[in-house]
Length: 217
Image (cartoon, rainbow, N blue to C red; front, top):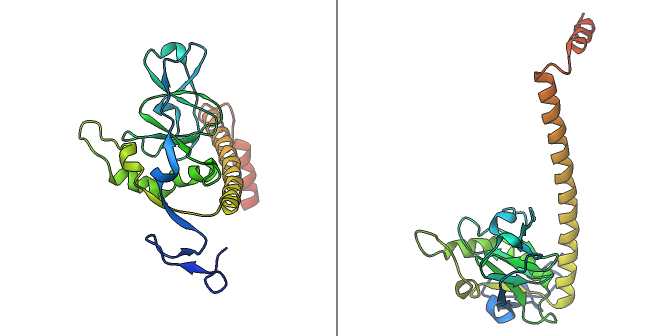
């Protein structure tokens, strides 16, 4: 944790930041992976419908056998970001390589010695960046944003060791949240199954009512 009483801070266009941090423009430290191709039948394809909104979770893949048009290519570690409303809050840190919709931007760091992909992912999924993207929509029939607009976003950039530490801590928190979410979903499935059994009469509660009455007497 930073403390202005102990650590040195400085003024910046984004407010007070640690002295060794910088403020950078997204387009100066990142770029798009502008590789496109017709996907092979055995490839993995990701559409906007395959990314869960606001969670960064991948729901699944589509067989490339079903895809007939040109797609964007992505590599492991790339960051995918939906640019079409209502999918601006869909993002994914690629765990494999594959092909995706041309309505998905594939964002990569210009230089891993300046900006690591893990920290870039935190920036892309931040509420500040998402609000910026939403505020810069254009078009009426199919509102969208573009890389030309998004690259003008400014954000604070720590030195590399601090980027790595921040990314590591938040990744650990994400893992805890994911485990808790999975446990919650499991309990919800058990509850749903139990409710169905109770309503169908497969499980009876008469004996519980009788026991409660006895205790009350």
